[in-house]
Amino acid sequence: MKRLVILGGGTAGTMVANKLRAAVGTHELHITVVDRDDAHHYQPGYLFMPFGIYNTTDIVRSRHRFIDDGVDLVLTEIDRVDPTYQTVHLADGRTLSYDYLVIATGVTPRPDATPGMQGALWGEKVHEFYSLPGAQALTEAMRRFRGGRLVVHITEMPIKCPVAPMEFTFLADDWLRKHGIRDRTEVTYVTPLDGAFTKPVASRELATALVDRQVGLETDFAVERIDNNTCELVSFDGRRIGFDLLVTVPLNMGADYVARSGMGDELNLVPCDQHTMASLAHPGVWVLGDAGTLQTSKAGSVAHFAVDVFVHNFVDEFNGRPATHGFDGHANCFIESGNRKGMLLDFNYTTEPFTGNFPLPAVGPFKLLKETHLNHIGKLAFRWIYWNLLLPGRPIPLIPTAMSLVGKRVETDVTAEGTGMPTTPAPSSPAPPPRPAKTTAEPVASKGRAPAKPRLETTPLVAPRPAATPAPAPRPSAPVGGYVDRPGVDSTADPTTVLPQPIVPKF
Image (cartoon, rainbow, N blue to C red):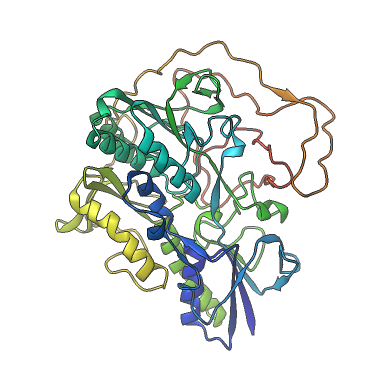
C-alpha cells in the first residue's frame, strides 16, 4: 500500500484528502493529514468580524468534521521534512514515512518581520485582521474608534487574498458612514504596488472606487518601519504617513518547518511547477494552496481549481496513465464593497481581470468588476458553499476549473495608459533626508534552540532601498516555470529576522 502524507488541514489539504479518498480505495492508498490543532478556520470571515457581520462561532469549526473517516488526522506541529529519505519529522518525536507528500500549510502573517510593527502601539493603534486573534482585537478597536486618520496598509506582496485590504477599506468607509463619523475620518490606502491592484483593468476600476469614496491612495510605499513615538508609517524613501488607527497586513510567510527542511525560498514558499504544482526540486512532492510559488492570487478559489487539476493527474499517474491536466492559474474572487454591494474578479496566468458577465454571457447573473447587490449575495453565500461543498470535495455548479473568456469584455490595451488609470495623488508628505539604517552587533537569542552564532561585524537590520524616482520602472514578472531558490527564514532560530532585501510581488 502506498502512503500519502498531507501537511496542513486547511482549505487545500482538506479538499485533497477528501477528493483522493473518494477516488482511490483505502486498500490502495493510506492518507494522513497533519495539522497543529482541530480548529478549521474560514479565513475569509476574518474580514467581516470587525464590522459585526460574523463572530468567532461563524468561522471556526472542527477539522474532524470535514475530513473523511477514511483519512488519519494527526494533530501536532511539524518539525521538518527530509525529502531525501521521504520522512516527515513531527514535533512530538514521531516520524511519518511517505511515498507521496502534499505541502499545504499555507502562509501566516509575520508582524515581527517589520521593525516597530509589534512595538508599543501593537494591539492599541496598530492592528491586523489576517488571524483570528487579530480580527478579534480589531473588532474592539473599531468599536472604540471615534474618527481621525484611518490607514489601511499592505507591507509587501504576496499576501493571502490580495483584495482583502481593499475590501476592508470599502467596508470601513461604509461602517464609518453608518456610524456618522466618516466626515471626521481621513481614510488612506497604502500599498507597495504602483496602483490599487496588480492588474491594470482591475486597478483602474478599484482606484475609481477609492476616488468615489474619497479614500487617499498612496502607492509604491515600501515600509521601512513603524514609528511608535510619532504614530507614523515610514517608507524607505523617507515618506511618513500618520495614523490614529493603522490596519496593516504584515508580511505573509510560509511555515518555519519549510526553512528548517531547506525546501523554500526567502518567504518559505516552496518553488513548484506553475501547471502541475509539483515541487521543482523534490520528486513525489506537490505544493497546494498558499504554500507554493504559483504566479496567481493566494486565494481559496485558486486552491479549489489547483486541487481539481492535481487530483486528476494524481489518480491518472497512480493508475499507470499519463497525466494530461494543467492548471491555468484561474482565480475567481468576490470583492465586498460595502453598502450591500460587491464586485467580482475572474482571471488566470495570461488573462487580465476584465469587465463583463459571469458565468454566462448577457445573462450573468454576476457582474465582473462592477458593484451589484447580487455580487454581495454571492460573497456572503460563499461561506455556506465553503462548509458544505468546497471542503467535502463536492462540485460547485457553473464554476469551471479552467478560466473562460465567455462573457468577458476583452480590452486589447491593458497598459496603464490604455486603461485610463486615474491620476495617482501626490504623496501625503514630503520626503525628508534619508536616515542611516540601524545596526546591531549583538547575537540574537533563540527560542528553545542553541544560541545563534555571534555576528562578527556590524550589519544592518534592514538593507536600505534606493531613493524613490519620479517614475518607477515596471515590476518584472517572474517566469511561469519557477523561481531562483533562496534560503528560507526560520523564525524559531532568529525571532528578530528581517528580510535582507526587497521582495518583488509574485502573481
